[in-house]
Length: 74
Image (cartoon, rainbow, N blue to C red; front, side, top):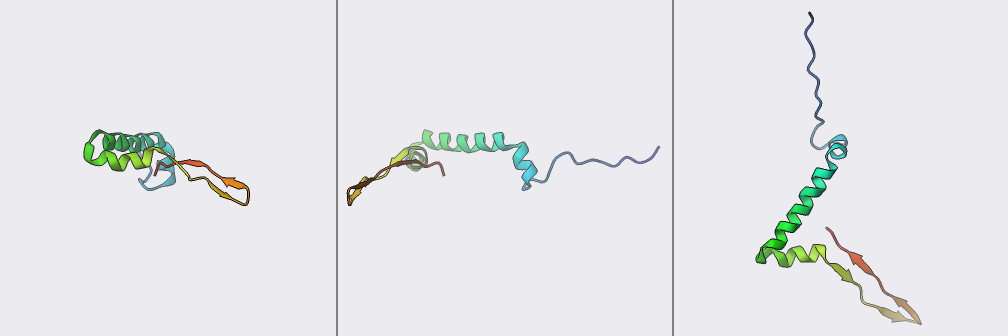
């Protein structure tokens, strides 16, 4: 019998294929970091800044109103 070549089924960590295969794990880890940040009083002030909805100030110029809100995640 011939020598079998070992196949590498796991792509390199910083490759596009790795991100495609593990995107759900990556997102869940990021969400877990924010939730852990909310649990402790010291870090909750900073974690709230990334999770809460922030509203823009309405500016009225020449009869036009500019208003909106944005959801800041990172």
